[in-house]
Image 1 (tube, rainbow, N blue to C red):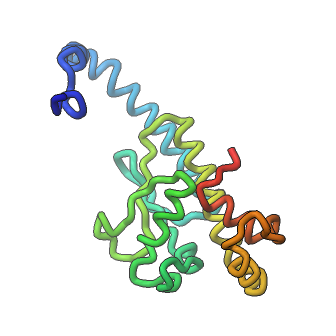
Image 2 (cartoon, helix red, strand yellow):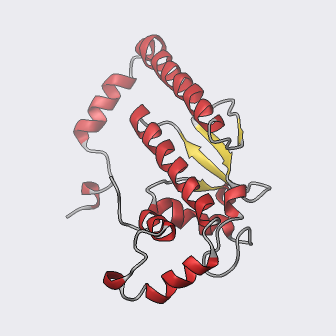
Length: 187
């Protein structure tokens, strides 16, 4: 095995890319206008999708990223016992999103001034962006829903969590939330 098997561009790929990218007229006439049209359309769609669940965001002026503010959902989580909205709340929200198969980048990586901002990349396919928004909306609903579950139901769950098969409250709201948030998928 060689490193080129895993990371370097093959000779065929390099030759094809060189052929496509070597004619500046084709780039100006076909590639750049097509790319600009696709990204403009996707940008408009993304901004519309962000207004539906009322997710605060910064309207991008260029590129294919948008910064979104998820701080109001960070206040509702408490992972590792540090309490919602704490020092590393962004890093606590990331595993919850990853479990829902949502991959955003924490604003900490980009030195955002306020906590709770995440970078969303909308440069992928339309289907991937649509699916990502569906998953994000579902994840945020689950986080908001968890805040509404009463303490008694949580205590019952904690007592019976060890014996999954004998759990009487399997269809409780908390259990449905836990099942959806964990790796069990309903797709």
